Image 1 (cartoon, helix red, strand yellow):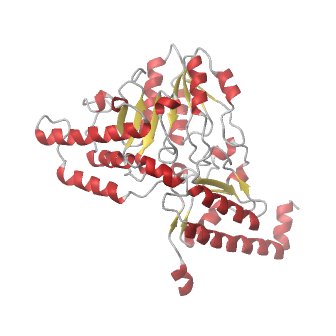
Image 2 (tube, helix red, strand yellow):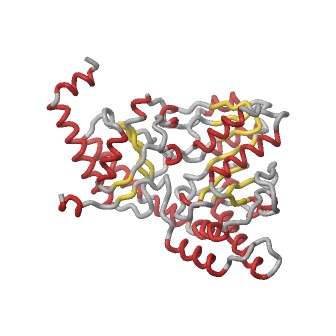
Image 3 (cartoon, one colour):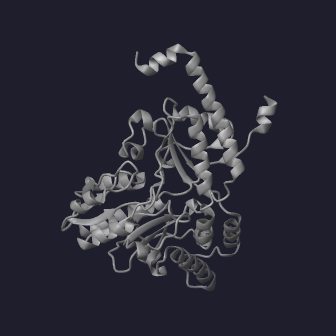
Length: 400
């Protein structure tokens, strides 16, 4: 037992849930906490210094996404940003226009906000996705009508990694005078993002998926597009979000955004690791199902179904051996319901509850993959051997 405990490692494969805070980000935050604690709304020097910290961070975030700094607004998190944009834009257009088209694989902070908007008279319709999680563009085009004011589609899916063709979606929407909103949280730092090139009118981002701190997010709103205050009070964030700013968190977000190009470059190295991981698992479990698409997918993200094996049991085993993975969105981890994303791409409830998500980070190495493969192979071989030796298991699986 002692030998087994000593051989355990600490492997983190859940970077889509959150990332660690990078040392250089922590250093900036500590400096701000120590020296720039003045209220940014104050007119004296101490306050103006804090305000400058915020504006510099805003410029860094804007540069990372190809936007103008006046188009970037800070919030407490991406969930707040998603709520702010969906609710205030809906309020602006309703009742003259009352239709939003979205997808069934959006993050819960989007889907639950859309369900809330239904109670306020908004007609929310969901465009189907194919088995890879990609929007069926012909159906989307047919759904957009003169009552549609917003098309809502995430850039990269947090559970299966599918990257949507937002450029095409934007062209379709604009042709029918609809605006485009995209949750870009999982994409920033993994693929290049330029909101102008994507053609989106609104987008949301989060620091803690980018080796920045938790407690700060941002939204992008194109200058020419409607935007209304979300939190009322003071004049912070150009009057769009009242409340004294979390200066150290904002500074940390800005610092993380300075390294976006480096993160994108480093993430490319995950591609061969991802292929090796999948191929070697397939060798031992022939019926393994890969839910993440081969093409146009985040190179750090793998979603796998292990037929006949509970994802809960598999995650417990991996956790016992020092390996952290998830079964889907961290925001819905406490729920035992099957993933809405996996169900949308055609999996049954049982298959969805036999699935796990693995998401690598910029520091994931070959040795981490090999250790995880060793642990998983041993477990899968033991499971296979037990089923072969136990006729009752065979009978139950055959439905007898």
